[in-house]
Every structure is written in structure tokens, then in C-alpha cells.
Image 1 (cartoon, one colour):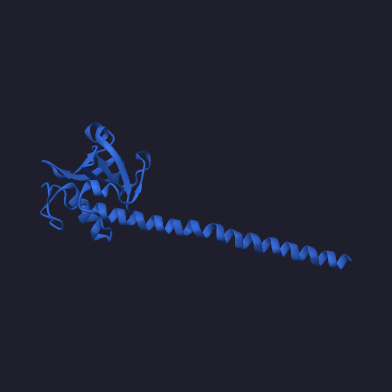
Image 2 (cartoon, one colour; image 1 turned 90 degrees about the vertical axis):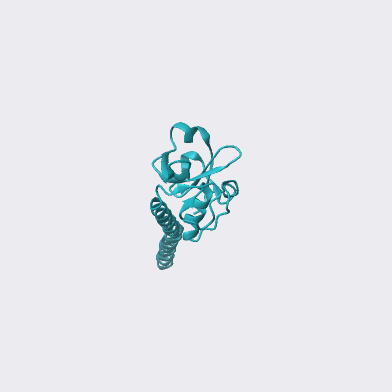
Length: 162
């Protein structure tokens, strides 16, 4: 009887150990995949932002042709940059405001698309630290502060497409 009890305890201990071992691995595996996906998204956003900064000062032209890099309007700018990294966006800011997933103002991450006016007719790229990169009027491609002034007052929504 004592021998059977010892075997039972050994088998039970082994079963618990295996459950914890494999259960623990299964619990951490999705987190590791999520971290890798998050790092990949963050890296893509960084590359899009870096490419966009190379066009600082490029003139604004409403209705600029897709693929043209001598002038941009707001949506041709975002369409061009994201397209370079495999993200296909529609041509207009209003149409772009309907793709991807909604993201709240407080949860903005670099690479998110930010939209203005109602109905939407302007788009910018959130680049972090309360800043957006976009193109409009005299400055052409520029960086603006989203947290104050005109852009804060006219903020409408944001979408995550990465």
C-alpha cells in the first residue's frame, strides 16, 4: 500500500510539473508573437515617417497625381508613403478615414492616420509626441503640433492601418 501511494504521488507531481511547464509555455507564446508583430509594425511606422521627412517642404498641390513626388496633397502624400511599404490606401482622405481600425486620440501610435474636419477632408500621419506630419498650403510637407491650436480644434478621428 505504501509503495502504491509513493507511485501515485510521483505520478501526480510529474503531471503537475508537466502541466505548469507546457501551460506556461503556451501562455507566453502568444505574447512573444504579439511583441514581434508589434515590433514589426513599429519598425514599418518608423520607416514610413523617415521617408516622409525626406519630403519636408515639398509643395502642396490639391489634386496632385498619385505617385508624383514633386508635389503632394494630403491624401496623395499618405497614399504614396504607405504604398512604399505595401499598405494600399484609397486616394482621398475621406476614403482613407474608413480603412483600418478606429483608434482613440489617447491611444495614438506613430504611423496612425489622423483625420480632420467634418466631413473628413484632411489626413496626417501621427509621428509621436503629439506631432503630425502632413501637407497643406504654403508650408507644403510639414510637421505640426496636434495637441494645441488649429489642429487640436479640428481633429475628427484616427485609424490604424499598420
